[in-house]
Length: 220
Image (tube, rainbow, N blue to C red; front, side):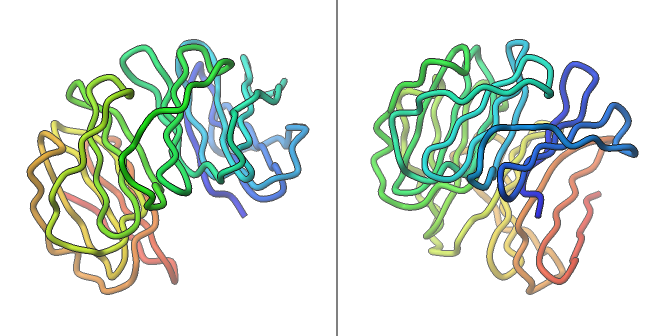
């Protein structure tokens, strides 16, 4: 099972169960790489000339080319579920409100999130990081270090978040879709489905969210 995918330096990289890493130059033909990790990998991103993948038991892997991977010391045993890059640093999030930051993907620093909720997704846009998770948790930071929890008014689990076209879009349990231009004020949108939405991304002028039983919703 594949849990995360990213694109950088002319290469798609997907990560998943059992430490699986797949690479492709065109998204059509894929090659399996040796990650050296046995833990499941849940998130992968690209920034500062390198790929970073995160996963179970605090696993962090770094690669300059998507082929050669090296395990890094994360300093935590918590499951890491999401990772992004922005404003000159990587930010990884996971169980127990875990937030780790790094400028190079090698040395990682634990940050105070102010929550014990599982954080499932993180993105960067409009000059800020936004992380989402269980119980309707939304955290915002301009630097990845100092985080502020936002009042959402719902306890719905949020599974993923992305940024594009000047707005953040978060998705989650029961088909919930939330949008925000600043990460602070959020509006609930009509998704047209009651099935949980597990992932969301932006590209080619549209947002695409996917979920259980193969559900796919697109906007606009």
